[in-house]
Length: 316
Image (tube, rainbow, N blue to C red):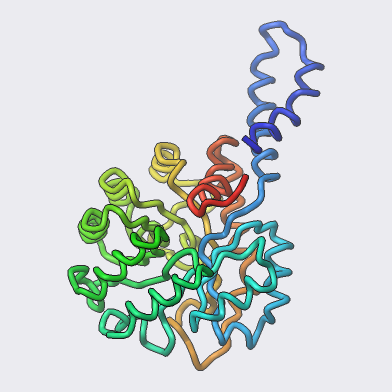
């Protein structure tokens, strides 16, 4: 509703100056298109994939991180901490802006071995019982490392999320959608926020998951020219590729955006080296701003803000 009011506010004065003659209606259409992009730009941003890691603090202070969010007009920031409790550090500085989710990694290499940790379910339950965390993740389930979602620890984690009614930020990397489909159908009561829309998947495979699992929403972080380069969603001019544009139009109520500010990206969890990801956050969000500006205002505002606001139960 917010973006609709903004659009009406922008259009109304210009419409009053227009003749009512039929020949002017093409001009009205052009005006609505251009002002629609401007209205969407006035809607705040929900960045639903942020990391706050101990080695990022070597480059960016907590206060600087919050200032970056403010400068980028990020009004809702979903943050996972490594170690987990670091996310609370940012929330303490900006409680109306930062939503912590419980990151399950504490040490190097846990991204590929977390499903073997016998203490995990107890840790997650205790964390959720505090009421401070609004989700779980990011968790990685990648072919060759973690692939059996029937594992009792993996299953228990998804069941815990359903019990506490919090989403799981899920990162999968498989060449087809079959694995993710099996997982989301096995846990229909668990809300899943699908990181990077499957990372390497083409639009047709992404749509299979969205069609087959109503409990899945997808986010498009790292689908930019600097990260998932082999599976682009935009062309060289920054325009959405036709198949992606059509997919997003059909499911504009189920996509969100995020920055995933981890940098350099060629080192997965480089615990022994500084991470400058927060310094890269403006260009990561600018990537989204550019392609969102090409969408109808209603779709752009939903993906930029409204979907995340509803998904995480925030006010208007």
